[in-house]
Length: 268
Ligand code: KIV
Ligand code: NA
Image (cartoon, rainbow, N blue to C red):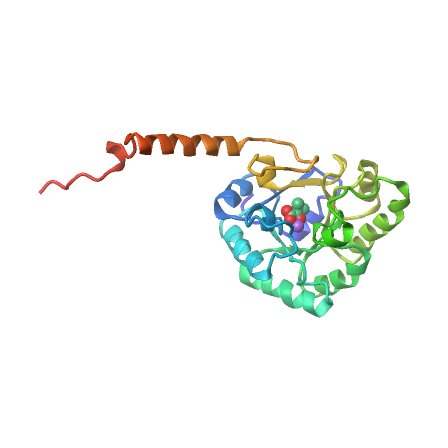
């Protein structure tokens, strides 16, 4: 592939080969993600992963813009999608458009993502009609942690299903090009994937979704405590610890820097 994927390409992958999405917040990781992923998501999870915050609630538009710029500079193939942070889109559709436009203008990203179901549908339609591709996000929506009372899987009792299905279809019908489904009962994710015409991207959802996303740092083993839905594909924290220990030992024993790492005088 020579040109960058667009939201229309992603939209066209419904029912096809599963979409591969990963978060990316920094240039070095974005370069690696760009080699394999269809979507590089600048997730507001960076608040917790990079900044050590307790939730995504304090994340600002400026943080998203700066990390978005790093990721667009370091990628050429993946569609870059940037999370709209809490408080930047819920007031109304004009506020949402103004802030989404700012993110796209400052970063060159190809789309934004925002959390919420039926109540956000009007906003999604307003953005899409004005040139802002939107990825939806339903199920567990971490920005609502303070009203949800914690990070709990959704739809594990069938009584919750109608509202969650209505949320997913409202966002799809409003013109979103794809939909993240986070931490929902597996059979509900299957049901939503069948019901909506756009690709679903699961995280703690189902292998039947049209794609999957994970927080890169989680799957690389860089974060401490991770949710049940994370599979460890690496243990980079152990490798980092080993490297830092070796460095410290060599500094203390004056083995580092060696001859190869210092500058000799020039011949005169
Ligand atoms: O912020 C994030 O990383 C996300 C994904 C986990 C979907 O929203
Ligand atoms: Na997010």
